Image 1 (tube, helix red, strand yellow):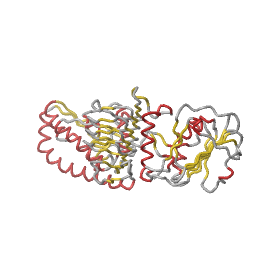
Image 2 (cartoon, rainbow, N blue to C red):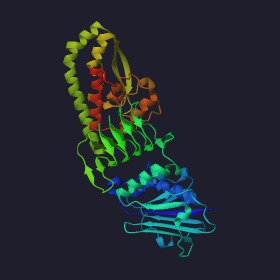
Image 3 (cartoon, rainbow, N blue to C red):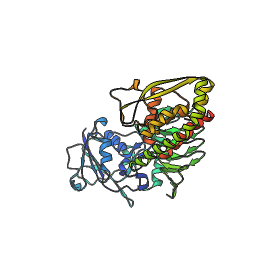
Image 4 (cartoon, helix red, strand yellow):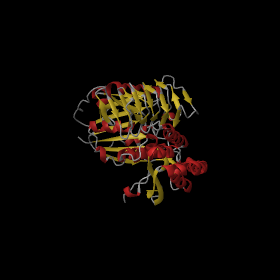
Length: 453
């Protein structure tokens, strides 16, 4: 049985602090946008066509849903004011579903079959009321919508958002298409390109998004929802909490029963927002294009001063060490940020003298020269060797640096999968704070042998 759904998304986001510039349809619930839950519900009703009427931020919905082919539904779009809402249900025979306002289609049970005939379902939400109508087309018949196994829940506050997310995570998540892949039998789901060290303890139920990174001795869960591109630093515990996309959580913190969005910690019970300026506690990791010039300038300037500091030490200590040990200087090539192959002299060696040489960063002098010249950054991902360059090399998230995650781990040449993960992660994390973090950890490893993820 064919049908049609209409989603009216022209109302403003009821929870701006959680919207982060996106319409309410893109609000993440347990790792998936709200609109995706409604698409899934519409498909269960037998809908095969969907009209999305989107206002501000509608391009985010458009780029996410596209034409609906991956869901098996045909999605079209319209601007607010271009659709006569009184005639929306004048569509071909079958099921008609209308959604207006932020609601979540909470499944109470297995979806029951729809009774034969043309059926109309109308869901409208405002802060004052919730209107639900189910009936035969053209008749004012009100029935219990829960006969379909659905309980529409309003999303008008942070308290609503938190309660729905926790309720879904604790009892009904497996009733929907789940994000990521199942980590264990306790209801845990983890996304792609996420790094969890051996000392990180994951306790379900929990949902972890894509491209996350957890420090050593962290405890995640139970009942934790972690968005995409989230960094949780060392010895931090998170439970009964929701961490939204692109958020940094500092070290040695206890986040319990909170919602964290960027640099804001929110108490879901009363909606109180604590906005912090201390980046070592929480921070918004979303890339800000206006900071690119500052970041680039800082990297070149810092590389210049490091090179200035190392040069006299190199002639005093480095040269004698090179004469005492077995050192080699070989020409090598790497791919710079612009995709051009750059030549430099690679210093390698062995023995105690070389270990001291590298501990004092003398082997990184050629990379610092390239950083001063702007070919690479002071910090970033591991540069791609000239021998490993592919003609189809994707440079969209390639930011090579002199100091890298691999260097902080003490890995000379990382596995391709790990190197790619680092590249993706740095592309989304790149900031002055992240560069300082990489630089500090690399120096700690070189001087004291302390490896960091």
